[in-house]
Length: 200
Image (cartoon, rainbow, N blue to C red; front, side, top):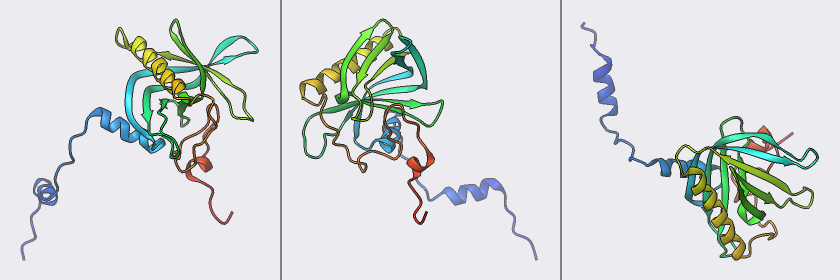
């Protein structure tokens, strides 16, 4: 009896001969699919910065403090809420230092300005939370990266403000937000990410 002869190349070629290669996707399409896992309402990416660092303003010491969030920043257009046709936009920072990403609904920002190297946003808090002042420092990997992204945030906020979404009551349902959606400044826990176990 002669044993069957096999080598890796012939087995691998035979095993994969029937599979078509995955369709080519652009970086924008890949980024969009990742963002939609966190926030399904995101429709398009308006602007991207390779790196942004998030600061919060400490009113007691009157100084900026690093929040521990930094990573790729996206300015995104979102689909309107179910009972509205008003445009929505957000700033999404995909944190590379920890699990807590930052999502700022520009409709909840009462003020946005560009001050030097920072884009400053005053975000209205919920009834239990105080308003937050957030500074976005955008790494200028090209000459105009900071300027383009700052202008896009400012213009997107103006569109949301003109549409009347600023200071609108929070209408988002938990089903609209992805599993990692969290309020600004709140840490993400495993129970928030995966839900409570039944029977506990």
